[in-house]
Length: 276
Length: 333
Image (cartoon, rainbow over all chains, first blue to last red; front, side, top):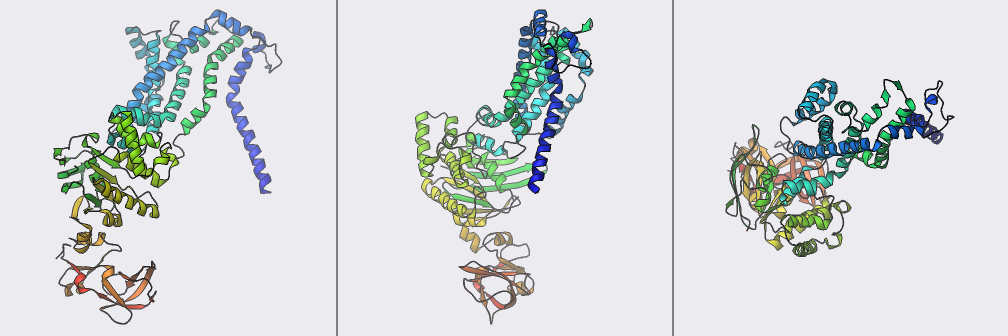
């Protein structure tokens, strides 16, 4: 009897998990489906699920109107560049907060996190003015810096949490063994924190890739990443849902594929330290 | 060489003085044990010597050189931690090699030293394993191996055996003592276990609330504790400390008598009492005797096979020349 109940409960859990997963993935799946529809069928009501005339025309049109690879390259540069720059700043910062905390470290961390609660619009004008003055509008370097700054609190927090898990005695042992600060970070701390650092990098690349607010506002053509590529297809002259969907699919495909292959690392990193 | 002198060494955390000004001299080649209850500052004192904590005041002199401001590595000391503190991502070989690598030794010399250390510590077959694949005792040996390859002027041990099970602890205790005999290097060893202190030390430093209560050889401390704190701390089971009218009979405010210095007799003796719990260890029996009118409970050691049990009336007689007398300040008279 008990066994039957367990099997039923298992089946229910599985069904529920699939339902939630489908619900979450639905917008993406619908976008991908729409991208293969001819424009009239894309806006048909009631919606056509699978019985439409499959076509790749939208992808041809999108690529013909705009050069996908230029945007793609900018996205890669901004995502990877802001992550690398962020790590360079966040590793020493998280190290000092985790291992030589001061009286205000906790407050500092909370303050850093609180900046994430501020709507970006609030600082839009000052940042825009600074960008004009420094000639950073529509430059990759400007975007790298601004996206890095936006995600820096999260990078520091994540690294701080991972570093906290590393017993201080091991670092002290390294100090006794004659390791200076640099060797301590290079040979002992970093290798031990690799799973954490890897998941931080992955998450940050995803966040930077998907960042739309700043990238759309601060770029026009030269530094425009894939977010701008998508927004270019939602024009006031009329909405072309199928083309927009094709552009969106092209924009999210790289990051989806990366996420798919690294999901093990992501999950391990995000739950790192939860169970000892 | 490995002579360490502390002159007025003080440690404050904020406004809290955990170690009031303290003087101590550790001679070259000595095995010194810092012992005391938890929170007495013994580990902090060791970390001050290691350089892992900064002194608030005073000087630390190692081999005649002022080391107060030197970094841990510059002091030429090696430390073994309670948690072993091995590098989990490195093999045993790389763990032991790490201090040599940091010192910039050539590869051949590193290998030679690692092999030698592994042989001494019976680790030769485990050199390519990771710490996670070793037992507690083996991990501790790797930690010691990492310390000895540096050929330090002194070893610092911070409660190195407290994570091991009882049987292993006895074994490792012997191994560390043998290592000391072999290397003749100064060792400073922190423990809260007075058995470890008694069995291993040339010199015991008893600490309480950051202050040194007494320094001496194990037997000196056992025979002539300077105050009631040392009297109660050194020796197992603890010395019985008795105050009141009976103490006045010995012209003392408090008098102490060790469990092994009290004779037990079922028929006659100085003090009458009732046996409470009795612990039979085979070789010895410890009785906790109540209702003596002296103290809530007196601990007494008797022979292994003795026909006295719970609830029996017994008579106790202290050996007169083994009585320790203390004044109202707890100091030895």
